[in-house]
Length: 161
Image 1 (spheres, rainbow, N blue to C red):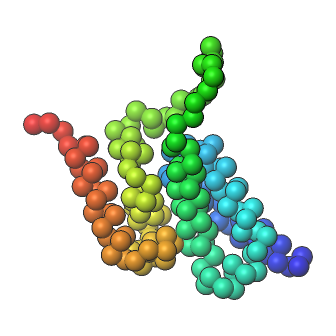
Image 2: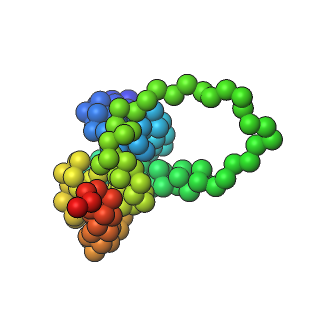
């Protein structure tokens, strides 16, 4: 058991920067990214031996888990939350440096699965087969989601003539 924990610790130390970047691209901000990574790693850590031996590629499994957790959270929170009273003060939130970047805004507006495909393909540099494995979808789904995302980005980012 102690060897397994050190194994997991070494894996996390080596993979954490990339997982945080992937999480940031999925969620749109570093704070939610850190929460997403922590939540997924907590779940994976308790069954690390199984994940390591049964999945073949723990990093792909963790990325898929992150994408699934993000989509699940998005589905839960997209519902309207009604409150009795509106707060008088606005909480302070630091400005995202990419918030007004047209490309970043367009990527953030993509549906979660399209965003995940674009991030894995162009940010993480994965192949279609690796993306399909990471998201548990077919390569055809990866291609169609990428095509739809690129079409959407072109439409949003095309300058008027």
